[in-house]
Image (cartoon, rainbow, N blue to C red; front, side):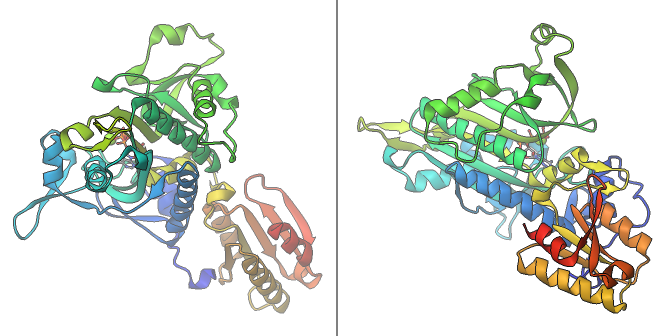
Length: 440
Ligand code: ATP
Ligand code: MG
């Protein structure tokens, strides 16, 4: 992408309305634009990052055996009347009437709709286990939308829903998502800690919020420090192994971790003072086993091996991609701007032409730009007439992992300078060697 032809409306000043660094940086870099309170457009740079986050979420959901579909944002109120949640949901639900005066709503979540899809076509235990997910916009009329897309009214959610014949099978489905979440957040460059969450009337130990530690987080959290060293399950984890997944779950839930709602002061105090952590955190995911809470009122049943009808056991599993993007920035930035983990960087490299019009600079940059693109890399080419200082500041601000700097003197010698955004380390390489390094 040539910067001169791109749409990246960078702000010179720090936006005053933004209270936390991720919100500031997302506005400054032109990743997002607020359209009305808590409702955002994702501009091209932001959209690139969001797409990469979604791609990783999708890969890990698929690896764990979940199947993607797409459900609408607008739902009929009828389904929600069946489950009893139409009245219960309160003011967070945006209620709408269509031209026939039928009550509709902008979905805040999809348990009812997926249960309806399930009951309309699945009749036998032989079709189970089943886990269906989508990545779709939700709307919740939050009392306090704030911090940009961290807590917005319209936001993206990956929501998955599992269906099983028995509670034991449902726990295995739960563990699959538990492991998928550990892998997902790790690939996004984050250390997310699963913390026990309230299960309400369902009871049991099968609701976890995945929390990233950050000073600007909205949740108060308490945990054992050893989480930092726990191993992330490998890509070749056998998701069909009931015992294998259970042992991963057991390991990751073997030490104390809770948000303030579930906090047990005595248990926390029992941990040595140097071993424990009380901090603030951002909830980026939430998984929940809820048994027959929806299958019962909505009549979602399958025929079991015994020939009888059984209510299915369900769970739901959410991740917030539009919250994850600012969460990644909260975890990875410095005074000059964002430092993207390579896995979600909007571009792999930015080629900076220090002197457009200089034959050496132009031909060097053209060569790099073509070679890197041909190797499948996402490259931003700063071919603008901005001052060198502006170009460096922009490259640092938008946080692309590698900067390739082509100045007239080096270019004449067939060389470029590589700068690592994270460490600041610089090295001079021949053009050939730079291409090899960046495409290795
Ligand atoms: P919170 O306690 O932060 O309001 P929640 O418990 O209401 O979250 P869930 O219903 O479990 O959230 O939704 C699953 C995921 O969707 C959350 O873990 C979060 O990543 C994301 N999410 C929820 N609400 C918002 C929001 N208003 N803006 C952005 N992302 C959100
Ligand atoms: Mg909420």
